[in-house]
Length: 448
Image (cartoon, rainbow, N blue to C red):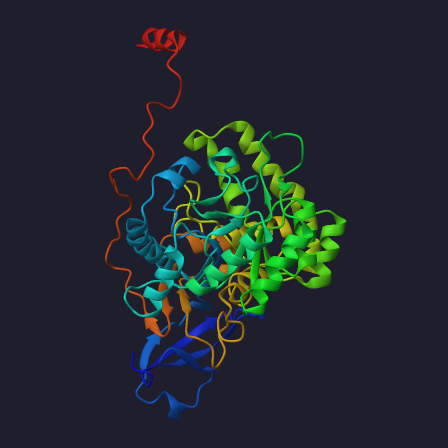
């Protein structure tokens, strides 16, 4: 890229991403960074390519702080764990990453991945091998055979799907060292998981001790790598905060003690309500279990108050969609978290945009240079057809995002991407959606 090439975006209503109200002005870009905002020196704008944004709105590129780019929208853990191949997963992820970028999300955090796809995809994007959003990535999540959301699909040791099963202190330390050597940006831990026999507790159960969590943080921090945790019950949130975690995903079902630990340590939270809300609101359209719909809806409503209190106490709240599953396909739902944070946590539209821009830079490990429209920041920008503050769900409306700019370059969104693919053995093959009892067969015949 020509680092001297200039672009001048003229006459936009600028939402800078810091929570400040919109202001009308121009933005001068030089190379991949913002040179000036507001009323640039005319001499500095000489020779710049003009982009007319009069009557339009300009925001920073959005950031999804909880994504799974290597999963390719599985319907079950069985499919994810047993129907994926390394090389093919990387190729498929390279297309799905473009869907994320075209949706206006110029950066994302890949929380964990199958194989080492996240590291390889990030490096390919950074090297210019392919077009995609900026990204940071975890490796295989550290998990024990009790934790996670996969129950008995997890072996007692070894690697499966997105997880590396560890139990002893030596296993934990060795795996952290392996992942850092491979090039991860974050170490992720499944601090809580679904019990094998559900229904006895609210949310998940904590599967790691506080001492084990401190060991993870001490080991990773010694080598300059932050730690993030999947936490969906009160004690897991509390102990992750006390242990020194740098970010917590979900943070649902907090109690007062967990909230106090989060606030005292100002641990950034990524509630990731989109997955639950999609199942609760639209699950019936895809045959979801009504009981599960109710459970996931309850997770949002039961958790909103403590998350709201964390926000009011200054804890950074980031937007995350958990895109990568059948309920959250790439490119479709990343925007929804902004409105959910407004609805359930009481964030203003400007605060919700900040959660997806300036604060999202925390997950990208680029605070102070990403997520704001300020001089010196990376030029990741969106030109919008209308005022997003009127309704944050407009970010998902076709045509609302008129132009996506990443690193000072306009993203080409004209060439269609494939919507889906039929790869032999990639999707789980099922005999049927239900059991064919004689009663069911006779009922079917009777309806003909």
